[in-house]
Image (cartoon, rainbow, N blue to C red; front, side):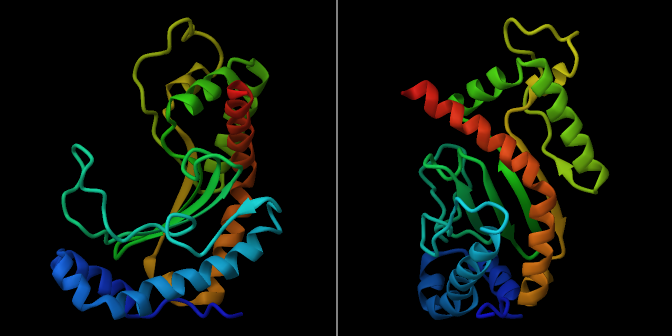
Length: 234
């Protein structure tokens, strides 16, 4: 296995970013960023992407920025966004389908000095995905199956994202079975692990694979929903 894990200096480097969150400091420590974060992230994507194809052969991954990797610089132009220029949380994504990597079902992880976050699905639906999701769960059989799936994941120790809405969509009777599913703004499950796991390549690969294998049924449901967006756009 080429990927041996991230350095034991990776998490301390992320802490240092928080303490020195400016472009000048980062430019002076660019080599450390490449050695502790960028290069091992690329190696991880290539290594784990091959493993993930055993679960989902059509999964997309690429060890490039704006593909499986995210920019270290934060988009400070967005209203209300954190204005610090650098991120101290490193995200990696493997996505299915031809749509936006954030709006089609994905296998996602991020790590920071506090946590290793592992999840699948889409955490925040934009309107096309939200519409497709709500249309999908209008089918009572699909709604029942999704509710059962979410409970089975929780029984295995995984968490489901919180509901994003307090009001039901127009035309939805809150008395119908499993109507609470209409209150979700996204659909994803996740687990939080100790961040030091990233330092052991073999254990990290094995742990993630088992988690994603458990979560695969929900990932596939969200992917099916994403396909409905494409059909509506034809």
